[in-house]
Length: 142
Image 1 (cartoon, rainbow, N blue to C red):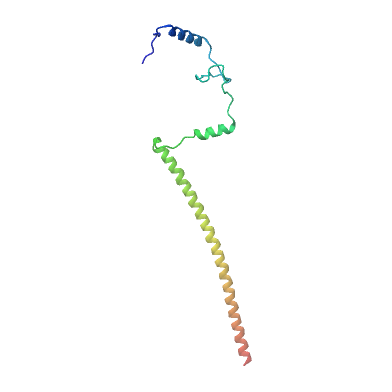
Image 2: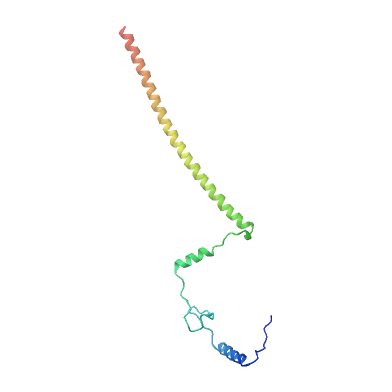
């Protein structure tokens, strides 16, 4: 509906007109940052000073984190692709870490097996040597 210039009939309309003219003649209230302060009816002008101090650094960090763009279905395929790419990258990094851990485990097991085999070979040489020694003693004792 378009605004009109009609006044309400009666004495109330004149009082409202006078109050509106008084409000229009008052310059707007400015904050310490130089911005116009708009007050609600529950905080009429002059009742309290507006809060104009900048928020603490912790609140700014929280506000920045909250302002970060969220991925929603309405964003279309690019947002979903970006989220998918991040997820796939994280999965591949986790797979690579698991493979590296498995390779390290296999290498340590191979070292243990080689060490065990070398001790087995030494043991076999000892048995063969003892057998030769026993055979020599038996032949010489005859």
